[in-house]
Amino acid sequence: MISLPFLSHPVSTLLVATYVWAAGVIGWYLLRLPFELKARRTRVADARHRTLRDYTLLTISTLGLGIIPAVFAITGWPRGFTYALSASQLAAGTAVFIVALWLFWRTHRDLGRNWSVTLEIKDSHQLITSGVYRQVRHPMYSAFFLWALAQALLLPNLVAGLSGLVGFGILFAFRVGREEAMMRETFGAEYDAYVARTKRIIPGLY
Image (tube, rainbow, N blue to C red; front, side, top):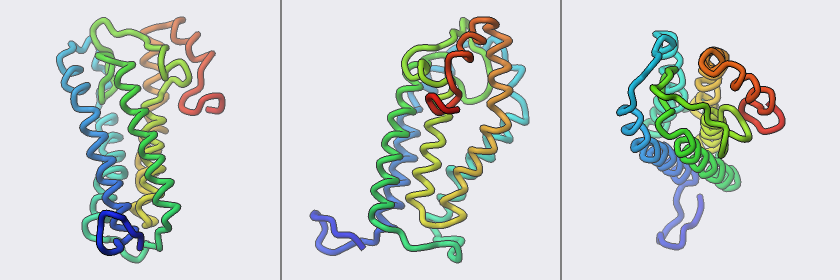
C-alpha cells in the first residue's frame, strides 16, 4: 500500500502501477495518432515487404505489449504468477515508461512522413540520420524495448509482465534484418555508411 496526499486512504501499489501502465499505453497511442494520420496521406512507393509475415509479427508484439497485460490488468489472470510489487519497482517502471514515451515522440518527429507501421518505402522516402537517428538506427525499437521493460516492472506477474519483452523480442529478431535489407536495397552505399557508424538500438553497444 502507498499513501497519496490527495486521497484520504492508502491505495494498492498494484492498482497505481496498473493505472500508470494503462496511462502509458494511452499516451503512446495519442502521441502516435497524428503522425499515423499524416503518414497515411503519403503515397507508398514500395510495399513488397508488407507481407503476412510482417502482420503476424505485429500481432505477436501486440499480444505481448497490449492484450496479455490488459487481461491481467482487468482480471488479474493468471493469478498464480503474481508477486508483491514494491514502491521502488513502481517508481522505476514509471520512469522507464516516461523515457519510452519521450523517445516514441522524438522518433516520430524525426521520421515525419517516412514513418510507417509496416515495412514499406514511401514516395520520396529519405534516409534519416539526424536527431535520435544519429545515435542508433532503430530508436523506435529502442522505445518499444523500454516500454516492454516498463511493463515488466509495473505489472508484477511473470506472464503479463514479461510478455512484452517476449512478444516484441520476437518481432525484433525476425524483422530487423529484413528491414535493414530493405533500406540497403533502397539507399545502397549511403545506408552502408550509416550502418558502419551506428548501432542498432543501444548507443555504442548493439
